Length: 370
Picture 1 (cartoon, one colour):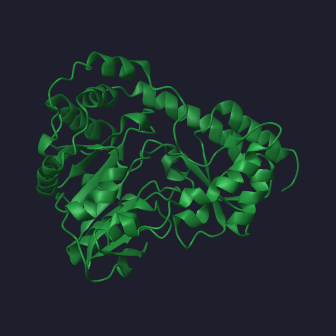
Picture 2 (picture 1 turned 60 degrees about the vertical axis):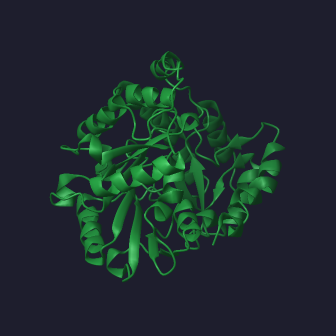
Picture 3 (picture 1 turned 90 degrees about the vertical axis):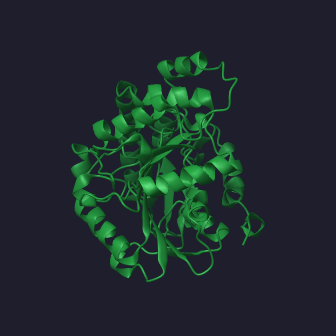
């Protein structure tokens, strides 16, 4: 298979709903895509500006300052001590890494790539581009022989599912039985809301309580897009098994996959500052506290969503019917079917619209039944 064989980009199907919602007298409230709207923090923009004399090629492996900042961040924020710079590698955003990982690992025909049943579609896309077989299976005991790569997503996009220490340890044990690489997409880990995540940090697959002392065949993927509003910078990284990280580094050198030097400098600064992350989380929390009760009052049930950047909502009817009903109120959501065949009655609503627009959505939802 090649990229030419991929289906049309699914968001094109949302265009009619966007057009309908845009005709609302109060204007469109776009809650469909989780693209940050808040300003990039000043200290990060300043760091980027300081590094714009970037006349030499950047380092694929990352600058020493960036690699050390990633190591320190995992120890401080994720409870993952004892990483070295050989365990980490910057990437050009996380989506390219997700899409390319099966190919970079050398997977191909006959190899199975497991991903969540309700999932970001790029896990499946990456498997198909490599010629592998994607399978949507949540339960580790059901992961089949022949599995070479397992993707888990914690907290999940779109449903906010978050794996506990015990659940992660069980996933690691099963992946080791299969001889598979286990890659954990953890890009929303700073955004815990309910249940144990109200007061506890979301755990990483690299947590020593999970790994049993060995990071072999384990990878953690992280992005600064959400916690630092750096989506436009394409700033992310991978950490874990030093053997795999070394292999990925060699392949990425050949392919020229190197984050720009000014972005690397800005990433190092961003990773060293926790205050802007705390402030951004509180902003998302305030929007969530406005939107969730309005959705529930309007007849939606919120499933999962204990962490992450979205509310995973259902009226118990076909998602496209909910999309149409919301569009009549000038609200654009993301349709559940984009995230797999197991989510045909859900819609995803992002917390990334400006607070004023989120409040307007809540007002419209509260103004009458759907």
